Length: 510
Image (spheres, helix red, strand yellow):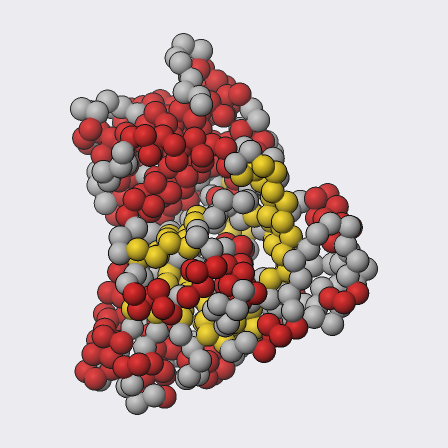
C-alpha cells in the first residue's frame, strides 16, 4: 500500500469518500508561523486554514516550528506534510464521517537544528500570523538571552522572531503580526504580550523596537475547543488504512464539534480571513463566556476525572462513560458542582445546555480520548481549570463542601504517587503496571509520598500556596474531605470509593 504524498495522491483508490487537496495548494505563500506540531493544532486551526484555502479565501500555508526533541519530524517530510483528518461523531442527530487530506502545512522546522531558517521565515513579507499551542506551561516568563540559537522558552523564541522581523523591515509598522496563542489559559494573548514586553526590557532591546512590538503587533486572546485524540488504536488505524487505500503515519481522528473563538477587532478579522470559510471561527471583541464554559466544564471535568477514571481501570473517556458509576460521577461533578462554581456570570440555562453537549461529546463512540494523555501537566491544569471554580463554589454556596470535587482531587493526589524514576521520568503503578507521571511537580509529590501519611500529604499539598495561589485548607471541610477519600481509595480501591457515593443520592443525568 502506498504511503501518503502528493506524488501518490493520483494512485489512491479509497472505499470511502475523501476530500483530496489540489496540487495548486502547494504553491500558496507561507503566511503562518506555527509553534507546535500537536494533534490539536492539526485537528483544528490547521484544518480550518486548509478548508479556507480550498475555498480560495485565505490562500496561505503554515510553517511549523517544532521546539521539543521528542517525536519524529521525518514523517512530515516523507508525506510532503500531508495528513489525514478523520472526523467522526453525531451532529444534530446525524452521523458524520468526513475524511480530509489536509495540505495547509508547507514544512516543519526543528527549532534546535534549523533556527536560522525560522528567522528567515520571520523576515518574509508574506508572513502575517503566528499560532501556538505549547501546553499550559508554555506561556511563562523565563529570563533568557533571546539571541540564543534558539531561546529556550516559547515567548523567547517568539520575541526573537519579532525582533528579526523588526530588523528585516526597518521597523515598518505595517509589518507587524497578529499572534494567536491557543494554550488553554485565561487571557492567553494578554499574558503572552506582557511576557514579550518584559523579555524585551530584560534583553535591553532598543526603545524603537519596544514601541514597534507594542503598537504594530496584536496578541489575541483565543480559545480552541475540539477533542482531537490523534492517532487511533491499532485496530481502528488498520481498518481506516484499508478504507482509505494508503498509509498515513500522521493520521488523526477528531470529533465533529469545533470552536475557535478569537478576541479581535476589524484588523484581526481582515488578517484572519479564513474565518469566512467556517462559522465556527468566531472573532469578537470579548470571548469570556466561550472560554469560561469550555475551561470550567469540559476541561475542568476532564481534569477532575482523569486520575479517577484511569486508576479505576479505564483507559479512555468513552470506556468510562460506558460505565454507570464513572458516568454518574462525570455528570454529577460537572452539572452539580462545576456549573455553580463558574467564576463568571453565565446564564444557568446556557451553562446547562453546554454541559449536556459536553456529556454527549464524551460519549462519542468514535473518539478514543485517553485519560493518561489528559494527565499531562496535571498540577498546572488543576490549578488553572478548577481552583477558581472551587473558590467561587464556596463563596456562592456558603461554604458547602463539594463532594465530587473532593473525590476528583483525592484521585489526583493518588495518581501522583510515584514509586520510582526511570530515565528522568517518575512512574506510578496501576494494577502492577507502571505509568508515566508527566508533571513538573512529580518530584515534589514523590518526596511527600515517601514520608507522609495520606492525610498528612493531603493537608500539606492543599496548603501549598505556591501550587494553588491559596491555602485550600482554609476552605471549610475540604482538606478533611479530600484526606478521607484519599485514605478510602488506598484502603478499598478507587472504583469502590466512587461506587459508595451513589447508593444514597440522586445521580444527575440528562
